[in-house]
Length: 488
Image (cartoon, rainbow, N blue to C red; front, side, top):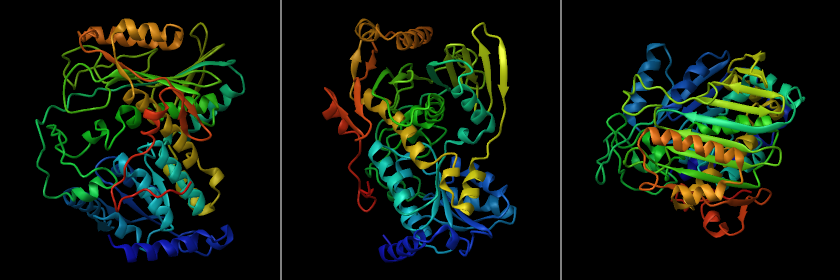
């Protein structure tokens, strides 16, 4: 680790953090070009590059990826358009550069919090992809680092920048549909088997796997899907690196549901029911799941389905189930009607009879909002402030922790457990109908009935019968030198 260089840059960053808003006007980039680096280029990082290139007064000055093949491919594509950012494989060297004002972080989930904290310590503002953390504890440290070092940190919950959704939230909160009775989120997205590798898989020679693994254990990969190989993308379905589709896609829908509810913190209780069903592969996270978060305002219910509407459908032709027209999105039920969000930035309001009342339309300005606030230094203007990103990311972790501390249960057992909760029972009933279409025998391959988690939101600790096992999953054992520091 280039410790001396990195710490020197961090010290400079801390000095910059102490500057007043007026002083920031004197800093290079505050009124001129904002110099941005993109970390992680194989997935969302490509979208970051596209968004940044469209913004006036922004220069992409560096890119970083521990896979030199990915790095070479992206830099070659940029060069065709006359862009020549400096390439890095080690984010520590990038963060030590004084020629960078801000970074966008599109690494795998297990790197999000540490990369964001290091960016804050090095005096860089940061845009961090969702979820902003791999576990609850490190998400709180990230939020604390942003506050301590006076950094602009935007969570990648871009739906919050849609003008239509902002208007819809305000309209519902004003009481136009009465009290919210349930806030639902859906991720019905095709996820095929990643197959079985049968043991450790050889690594591509182009990747620095020590850097890629970072805070996670340095373990040889045990996956090798035809599409993604042994390292890329399918890390989403491995607990050491990802958070399943709850953290991959569900973070958006749970964030929107909580936004509508107006709940600033975490729920009183959480319960998960789900499993990885329909095939056997090297994936670990559920591909079918229902999570309920018990909020005082109304329940927040989130559903995952990775299997298509019908079995044996080719991927190109497969359709997904829909709930009231939604495969990926939200349904916010109220006393006087509902809000249906079938996508990202548009919503429709219906009365109780199903008649369309109003439409809300908008567009994504999330990266532009980040750049605007870098210039103004008015953190209150951020659409996805890191504190909100931490809470919504923690909703994902709560659902996954419930699953991880749960036990296999046959239908009679879990139906008895949830029978007093009508919204949860209804969602689980539809889930079992979906699985029956795929000939999944829940008596032979049972679902995991999660632990009912009682949570102290102020302390961010579990209480009650499952507390010991659940609290052990609030954080992880980090691998030096990639250790998340305790700040909060």
